[in-house]
Image (cartoon, rainbow, N blue to C red; front, side, top):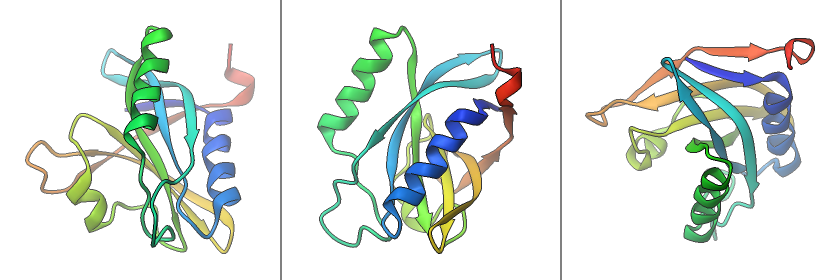
Length: 145
């Protein structure tokens, strides 16, 4: 199960809309507690892919190292990454499956005609055969402390 604030969901959606019709990407920082992955912060990255940015994203080694450093400094963990699917469903593609790692969380937002729609969360199965969709608990803006 995933816990995330409405503000952070809004941030992912906005990032996807601002980069449309290319895929956006970023890091997810938080903690694991009692079986929940609790998301505290996001780090927006620029898509470093040289070509086909409408269907692919690339997080550079430098961006990855920065995300790990930011998490360490906050005494949190790098939980995973998010990205957008311009004009495609918020479901992992075969490319996503082929390049994912089972210990990371992946959030995907579908951006249709420039407007963010569905947002889903996924964990890759240990045998790399596919993803399991994760339940998302959204902390509403007025519920946040």
